[in-house]
Length: 270
Image (cartoon, rainbow, N blue to C red; front, side, top):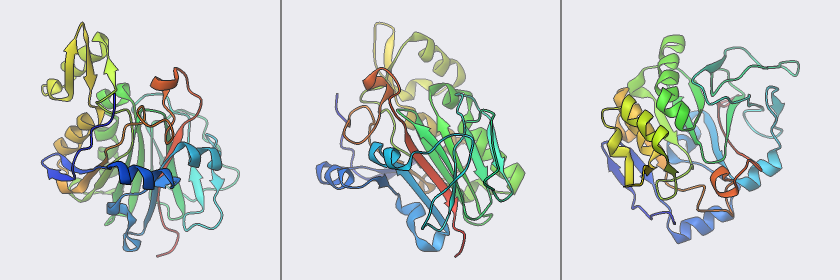
């Protein structure tokens, strides 16, 4: 199956960034994807959604921060991901000696010069920024974490720990398995239906105990339910399963042969 070319639109659930053939050609020449909501130099934030080529160049490990020379946010940190709902808070400057040996599926920081990163290969990378309180988050949301509430839980953590105002947050949902390709079975469907009264709205093409799950739409709905307006939510409407030349995909390849890296951080200087 292929990705649908959805025209750019602003609806009640957020703004979608869609890519036609020309857009895909331009993306194929780039190693990372950025979104306008975070890209302004005045935002004081640096971010990217990575591709397979970028991940191969970056060679990011887990649990230990690495230095990235020549950028305004010189540290980047990724941790072990466990498909849960816990977040690691980084509220002090990082050092070469730091090690983070636990498992988390979101990272939150208010430290300038530190980029927090997640790794995905069909799961959804979600980046969040509060320009007023100057705090950012990177979230890894597979179906288990998304259904269990990793995204709203992280947003609430940003509010309680750093005073973020949910109505001021900007959220971007990155490349992931699309509804065009992401078929799930009865145990997953049951969890979606049990957790959400609106669960059927994110399911498509039911047949023989299976259906296709629109994981991006599920996350957009959760974000909306937290009080974040549609104009503050963007989505990169690209399927990782469809585009082998751009992305790793667990579903397509049958195993993890690599992961994309997506990250966000406050600039060290403004």
